[in-house]
Image: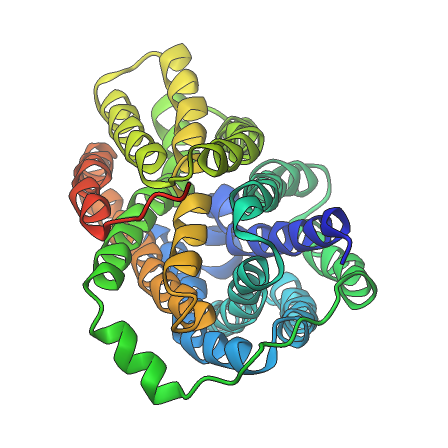
Length: 385
């Protein structure tokens, strides 16, 4: 297997996955007008995608453990292409909701099998670095949604802007089919034994709690940062999207380094603790600062905090529970994360609609950012020599 080629293919898959999930975020006002919805309605549009992902994750993880990842990734790419065409063309709110749910299901077929592929196809001493490079695709995908889509919408219209996503899917599909080798599991685990073993494992529940709280903080930023910049600082949609995308610059640049360092020291936990506390500091600055310069610096640091937590958490789960079934373990913790990720859109929309301020949103995110650390420390990672 050509490791660099495989890593690049999986990076393209992650780019598509992350571009799809953030489609409504930077064009909230425009979608309100197009679909006849309010902030809460567009928040629901964002959250239902994550709900679809959460519901599909565990079946997809079980299937990946038994049959491998390539077929699931290929199917997810095809579905993503088809549903994104439908979203670009519809002007009906409830159709948009159904399509976004379908995109969430397709997303689970992209993301969970990718994580399982890393654990099954790469040696342990390389997984952190590989996942770091793949996670750079997260930053690129989010920049597409936060920067490129608003620019296209401003230069053309929403329909043409959203049609960029199926074009990306059409590019990724042959890359996956031709560039990704099938890796079959060595054995087919018994499903009920997998589920029973995980449900009795305290470290699994602590890791799930950590991931749940991580996604609460991450999606508070992803869902509401562009709108925050537009309302509180007067930026245009394109400007707010571009500034918000700076999170992804440091995320993309820092993820490979975070993975490499964790491979070198033989432990993921210390880096993840530092990243968690760093995010809490950034949220505190969001609450108290009215300085545009300080906010931009905090946005860059927020991307670093994500790089120090998200990819390493995913690798750690796959490694710790590889004997039970890394696909199921990754899917289950990712389900907890996706359920958490569906909350900020709805709750944040309600808070903004009723209070007209972002302070409560950022305050809750600060609490969860710091509060996840004890759960991570309780996981009890064994340091690798």
